[in-house]
Structure formats: C-alpha cells, structure tokens
Length: 115
Image: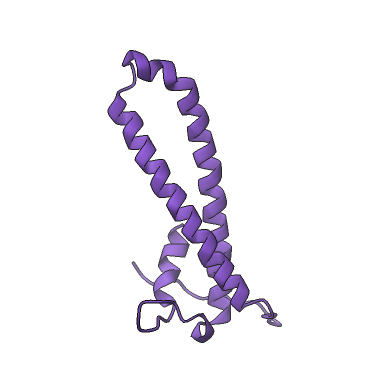
C-alpha cells in the first residue's frame, strides 16, 4: 500500500480532478495496477481473517469482556478497508485498460514520489 500511495501523486490529472491515464507513463500505470491489486488482495484476506475472529469473539462482546467500542472501531476499520479495496480495484482496472497493449522490450521501474 505504501508504494501505491507514493505512486499516485505521479499521475497527471485533468481539470475536474480526474486522472489523465492517456498522458501517464505506461510503466507507472503497470506498477500502480500491480500494487493496487496486491493491496486489494491483502485487504480482502485481512478482512476475512478479522471477520472470522469477530464471529468467534461474539460471546465475549455480549458479556462485555470485549468492549462495544472495540467492536465498533473494528467495524469502521473494516468499512474503510473495504472502500479502499474497491477503489484499488477501480484504479487497477483503469490502469490495465490503458496499458492493455503495452509490451516493453525491457521492463523499467518508476521511482515513487517522496513522502
């Protein structure tokens, strides 16, 4: 996710705040798509694991051994991660669509922006 977040500022934007994929470096788009897909897969696996843990912890939440605040915070975290994963999917799909015919002789990496 770190690499993905540091690559996003390198994308050109149109007026109206939309990404101008056609003007972007194709190698950058491929890297962003790869990192977005990795982040999405990691989030999905993590959300699944947290969901299983919450299901097994339900009795402890009901008895108060685990606070309702903790369960609520996990719920908000899961919602934000789900939204991030959905956005990563859309970003990856757009990058893949704009690089479908990109086949460089030698792959090259684009450096991340500095935080």
